[in-house]
Amino acid sequence: MSQRLEFPGGFWWGVAGAAHQIEGGNVNNDSWVLEHTPGSPFVESSGDACDHYHRYPQDIALIASLGFNTYRFSLEWSRIEPEEGEFSTAALEHYRRMLATCHEHGLTPILTYHHMSSPRWFAAKGGWEVLANADYFARYCERATAHLGDLIGAACTVNEPNLGLQLQLMGVMPPDSVLANAPFRAVAAKAVGSELFSAFPSCCQHQLARDTFLKAHRLAVNAIKSGKGDFPVGMALSIMDYQAVDGGEAVRDKAREETDVPFLEAARDDDFIGVQTYSRVRFGPNGMVNPDEGAELTQLFYEFYPEALEATIRYAASYTGKPVIVTENGIGTSDDSRRIEFIIRALHGVKRCLQDGIDVRGYCHWSLFDNFEWTLGYRPTFGLIAVDRVTQERRLKLSAKFLGEVARANGFEMSGN
Image (cartoon, rainbow, N blue to C red):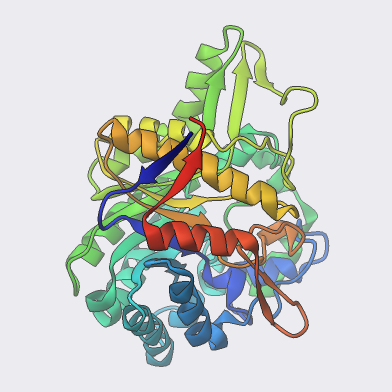
């Protein structure tokens, strides 16, 4: 027996990408520095990435032709403000053309002002570990909005400002004390001419970075709201489905307090909360619990668990009282049939949230392309579209066509429950 999953009129169906991960040639930011620093966690350089900086007209047209109505992408701060206080009109005009191209193809642009990478000069000032540096971010947001605001559909100030705390909690990233003494930090600091060099998320004072992000977010919201345009503004948080097993409720709740709660509190003053979910994390009374033996894992070795999205939407909406935009959801896998299964099950969860009256405004899939996944380079493949690393040829996967058709129809037929 089949059933039709219908979504509300005006629902945003999108794909997501980030400047440094797809543009190519972003040589002036902190990530590029680390990519070329011996001993750093990066396994390779971003290089030309997907050459989206030059190929965006064709890429945006392709997004629209697939059936999507939304494109979430980010500005590259280091292009717009290559040196402290020096703003590039040419770079701002580039992003204005991107926004205009979205509108020409009927796409609502969701713009992210900061997606992981920062200018070298900002990193040389201590980056996100220095509270006063929040003012630099707010100034950049003010200048960018003055040039672009009338074309923005929605905006995220910062992407996953809680990621460093989350990675440390999960044991993926070393503690601050280890990071502070990592030899690569001294090499990178020499490259930018400052001992204060700090790049997120591999900074070594994550509590300070948290406070700087929170201040920067609030200042940025005010700066953006005072500029051109009238559009919703929020932040995009990495929210894993934290689950308690065998009496692990207290440990789970402590993890939430450390990685989620300060940012969810801040989001109560925003127009929406961006939810970015990939899997679940389980906690017992003694800490994290590994996935069950035989559980399906992704290329990043976390559990294949698309049901996490429904839980995190409910959590974020309940805590903040704000509308939700799923700003990222996806899977790193070489098996595209599993990506389609992941999407189907995740969208079932979105639909259940809608049926229960939760205000979910849209779903943006991560990611548009198989792109540069930071320290892991090009090894994980999250994209709906494969990219030849030599020729830059784009190849649609079946998942791109599937999700595009869902977007075009604003729903899909499903058998079973």
